[in-house]
Image (cartoon, rainbow, N blue to C red):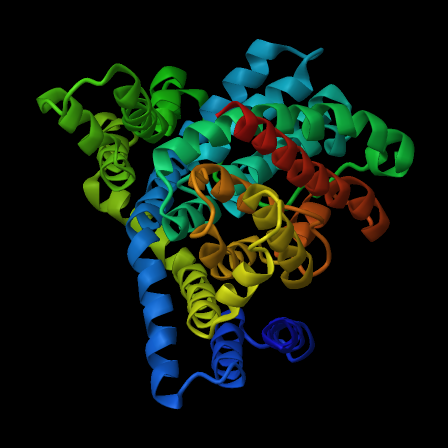
Length: 448
């Protein structure tokens, strides 16, 4: 019965969003109330559960998420992201242009959220495709692969950040393992699959794309910050969080004590501290060092947060539904079902996230709802690696992007593809990202 109620809740969510065009946040809150009452929760506890889920989720990630958005916007507005992309594409050369786009998009994608990365990079990809007289889809697929993989696997992106916090995983380790998983994944999906896709949907590779889609501010070469400082600023949070994670990994092996240096590395490697220090660095390198007024920089930061206000609410709404599933006993019910099962918790998390992603469209909402179903089942599993469960959830949330996903339409329109061509390229590509992510995570699970 609890699973039937969850299924009905998911169906209602789909109806509210797709049929009645209700706002996603409003739909999530309505469904949270309905599911809570249907599960038999006392009416006096329903509101408290929803508020706890919403506040608890945003309390974990608002700091990282907000500063990550500001960091990305500062790098983009200063021309740093353009500098990284153009320099790498120039260095790799025409013959390895797909590798150049993949590598540049991966680095830019660490700092920028999925939609922002696509909007920023499409005009660059468009101009390169026109100059080299190749299809924009040939260059666009590596670009969207890298953007999707960083979105699914790497903090400070909302999905991995939120789910790591919900599982109680170490965000620094999630980042390190996420990079390890993402590298082979983007090669499979972004370099190898497009060769096959050209045979499946050859017409897609004749497209010229949309010249006007995502038009951004254009920069003269002398207006952009240098490549080295742009790259260092974009990767600075990765460096700091990786340092903290490495200390956590090696300390048990070598058995050294918590001295002042270790405590300092742990402090600056904490995800919140790392994002704050990275933001301050970006204010200097992307702004003050180049004589840009502080007011202009703060306007960029404000616009980044304003644009993400609704996304924060949607994440909070997903957290509310997650908490209702836990407080209503659904998680315990699922845990009981799988109590005697030999199924890997990594595979279980991936499977639940994949099903919810296909139904709901939103990868972030899918990860949060998955957490509500998976968390209780983890309690009875000894030595479970929470970082890998978080990665598997992120991988599942990337699967089969289709018509109920805003990212699907963004990719389709920006690359100028028909619906059939988008299914044959991006939908399959996102599924490869999900499956490859699962396989790599399971291999890591065996090793670790």
